[in-house]
Image (cartoon, rainbow, N blue to C red):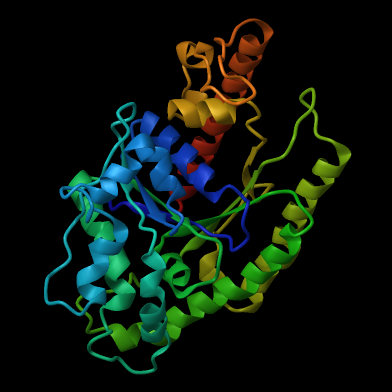
Length: 355
C-alpha cells in the first residue's frame, strides 16, 4: 500500500504536537509498522528528540548535513535542473522501524516563494513545481524505506508551508489542550482549513503540467488529541473535565458544521464514533524528564531506565538512583501511558482504514 500521510495541525502553541507525533510514531513502529516522522517545524524539536546529543554533528558532518527537509527540496526552490532524491533518514537505535526526515532551522526561508506560487492565478514556469515539492520528497523517501505511515509535525502558524503540508496529507489530527483559548483556535481552524481545501478545487488545474504534483484528494479529519492535563488520584478536576468537554463541543458544534457549511465535506470521514477525541493524554509528570534524558517515550522506558539517576542539577549535584515509592509510582505511570498509547495507536489504525 502507499504510505498514508497524516499531518498534526494546530496554529496554537503548547498543544504538544511534537510530543504527540513522536510518541504515536514510536508506538506504531513498536507494533511493526514502518513510520516516517517529518519535522516541518523550524524549531526542530522533533529532530532533537530523535538525534539527541548527535543533533549538532548531524548538521555539520559532510555526510549528513544536507540530509534534511530543506536541503531535500532545495533544487526545486532554487530553480535548479537537478531532480529531487530521497534523503537518508536517521533512526533511533532502540526502534529500527522509525525513520526521521530531519527538520532545518531555516526551513521558513522557502515560505515566501511558496506562498507566491500558491496564490498565483496562472502557472509561472519557474514556480510550477513548488507546491508539489514537499510531497514528492516525502514519497521518494517513503519508497526508499517502504514506509507505512508518515506523521508530519508542523509549527504553530498558518503559513504557506503549513497549508502545503495540509494539502499533501491524507488526513489530519488536531492536537489541543484544555485551556481557555482552545475553543477559539478550533473555530479558526474551521474557517482556515476549508479555505485550503477550496484552494485545491481552484488551483490544481493550474499546476497540472508540473513535474512535481500535489495529490488531488483532500485530507480527512481523523479527530482531536487532548494533551497536557493534570490528573490527581486518577481523577480530573472539575475545571479540567469542563475544559475537555468544551473542546469536544467546539469540534462538534463549531468545527464540523463550519466544514459542512463550506461545502468541503470531503474533509470529513463518512462516520465517527461517539467522540471526536481519539486520545486523551494527561501530563507525563516526572516521566517527562526521564524520557528526554534516556531518549525514549515514557511508555518505552525499561525498569533499568527508570532506576537510573537523573543528570546532576544545581539543586541535586549528586543525584541518586530512583528507588522506593517514587520508582513504583514511575512504573505505574509507565504502565498507564502504555495502555493510553496502545489505545491511541489502535484507534488511529482503525480510522486510517477509512482513508
